[in-house]
Image 1 (cartoon, one colour):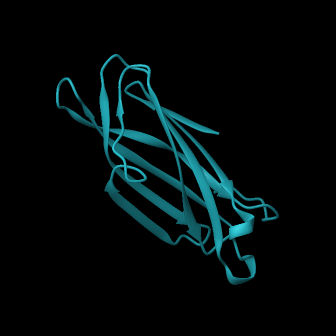
Image 2: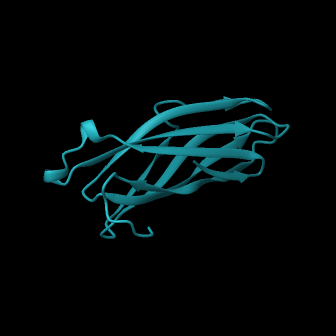
Length: 131
């Protein structure tokens, strides 16, 4: 589990390797990751956009940007949380992901970025090494 808090918005990431959807012989490695976004502050916020930076074990990078997450732009009142699951595919048996969410404070209209914790994508049986 990977956790990062920015401006009282707590992001928890939990990745897991999907062996049944992967084809190791073909260099097709699939992960799902579950993200929980928790508003620990006292103001209502809305997630507007996401930005991901994904790097595989050979240094190949993918950048993913767009509105919301899994087709939604959740609104979080104080004390509320939102959870979703998504996925990514790499051509190597490991990698890392990091990113940010653009949020909007509903009271002030201020936009700010919330850091998504950097997390590793590891598959069973890989040679252990730091990402």
